[in-house]
Length: 444
Image 1 (cartoon, rainbow, N blue to C red):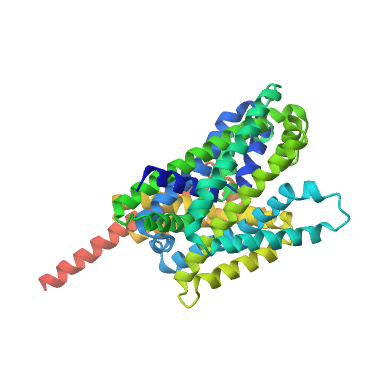
Image 2 (spheres, rainbow, N blue to C red; image 1 turned 90 degrees about the vertical axis):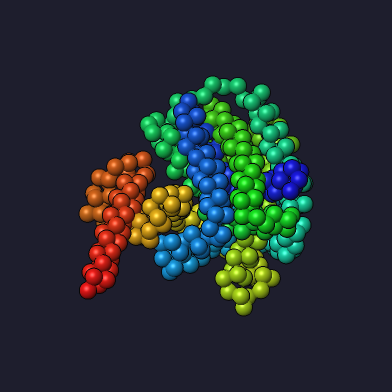
């Protein structure tokens, strides 16, 4: 495959990844981290860039997300993968991106109209999802549209805004807020969950494999190598953007208080470029959210049409578009309030699953290792997620709070290690008993 094609596929992957969460959370992190910015953004990049890249490679090694999950149990493989696709697709990520595209790309310019906001959102979402639908049905054109045109425009717009900001915003970084005063690296690590990119990698792995195969790459080793190359291109672009918009957020701390990353970027754009900044920011958010919605719709279409052959790709894309359109009109706050606890539940499971995939050969791929590690990880992460919904139990709260690293949101790490080790020992004992039984039967 030509270097030019590798670059365009990498940029396509970047544009698929880069959506609402990627724009909202880094500047808000910078705002809170202040002088602790660098360790905080490093943690953010670990889960926002490093983990998605590892997931991509793991998916290529095992062919698809279902196969990876099946190493725990076939039931887990299917159910977990379906839940991931639904969350990064029509239930959470796509409606979130469409809402943010409206709030940043349209509302600032039409908010003064007498028409009600819900009606404006409805009109916007009709046009938005019609375009998403049409582009998702033409997957062969996605690389051309997204890799050659949209991604360069998106990157250039972000660089213009941030470079201008570094010249205009000259106040020194402030002290970190309470949440970043200690363990800022771990706080950034948890913040990286909110991008949803590691979960999206489970879906985008299939899209990247399809794009590479369309360009004549069929050998397993070459597919792995080109996936890594395109992933590094996308990851480098993501890391660059996270750092510069994160720094922009850190510099904005001296210019007021802000409730979220959207407010940080809006104020920065206005301070730096005036009304032109509002237009530029609208372009950035609309392009970023649109490309991500297209990528996620394609991924869902490819996965569910393969999982249920009676459903054609067009039928799945239609269903995903209709459900996403419907949920978009519920509003952004309702979507985020449900998605964050889900991410707290899902991310530890994904991290452990991918880690085991790379360690697979060292423990002989024993199913008991996967099952033990995932079981104890799930007990902790599911409780952490339920706690965010307001469901707490005093006994469990005391127990979970006593776990190592629980204070920095990583209470699942030691249980995962313990579960994997217990599974390994149990597998060895079982194999030994089976071997001894076989020898006895053979001797008799």
